[in-house]
Length: 312
Image (cartoon, rainbow, N blue to C red; front, top):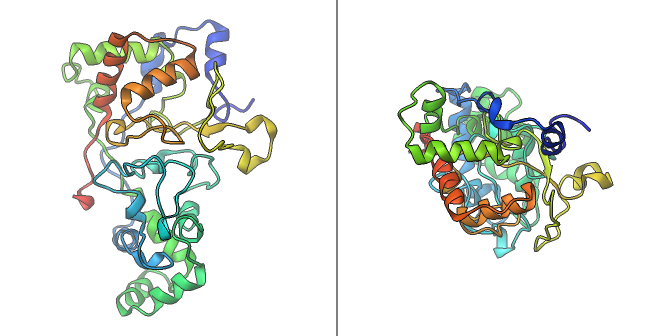
């Protein structure tokens, strides 16, 4: 079993360890500043909202990753060109730079590798590399800006690089919980602190940890009970073709979680209450009380950070 690729839950429980005894060290605050190339990021921002990247000029990256809606959208699955529906929930782009890989199945190693995927996906932007390069090359402003930063000009590689550079700036620091981790112990209410203690003691932190409070491992959806999603999505298996990887997905980040409903890879959980209850059942083999759920949600709401200035 590769550490960071498979479940840590069983290991913790098999060893009989108390997660609460060392869990405070498993979550780190987001850095206050994100390092990027400002000029490339500005170009990437314009590309991110440009529907020319799609086949018919109706869909942009922003269409499914609304920066005013937690970096995702309000749909269970997003709609692309021609109203075509996908089969998986759009993950947030906020803090994506801190994930171990991109997409729910981890098929892209980083943001640059991810950027071109939706452009050529037939149910998303449904375009082609040649078409996008041709359209952008006809725009004098894009011609000038690309030449200034990339000797090779406008290519799918330079388009992807600029998009990735913008997405690197999409971090949300200064969540109240980050301030708590930095030593401001009075910033959380008693209910929020109790929620954090439950988050640790009930085992949530076994998978939701690290700087992104998720995004750093793959986990089977349905550890203690079989889960059937509406699309029978196979997850990590789509990449590895290994039977043992069926129904494994990248653990999502919990940062800004109150802003990104609906939840899960199939968008089946409409509320945080529903998501917490189902996570406890399927992933931890627990049934939480109403009071426990309310306290955990109070904690989760402390993970909402500040929007980056370039999207305000």
